[in-house]
Amino acid sequence: MDTVKVATTLVDKREDIIQCWLKKVVAHPVLAAVPMTPVLRRDHAGLLLAEIADRLRGRPSLRVSDPAVHFAQERLALGYTPEMEAIELALMIEAADEVLAAEHDPNDRLAAVAELLGLAQRALETAVRACGGHEEAAAV
Image: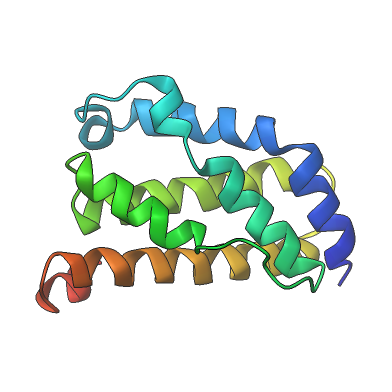
């Protein structure tokens, strides 16, 4: 698996991934119902992808806080539920995989998807804890 090459593509194609993801998010009726400016909606998407690229390169994160946790907290403050966050993060994984598919075989893409799933898990655990319960975790 060439995870360094996938990491490079994540960085080089970050804007393509974000644009693909944004199209999916604004087309989703539940997510689009939450009013957000395009700048706010895409906030942290680049940091999430950069975090994944660093992990794929084997670099320790130098960020003061986990972008996944910050993303979850921000979305909750804007009115998202943990379920909505799960949908949005699933769309991010889908968008990244679609863009990566143009240049990488499925085995190489698998590493990026696995890292994105770990990031999604951290974000969703944060959201569920913030909502004060474990019942929501089963639905996510």
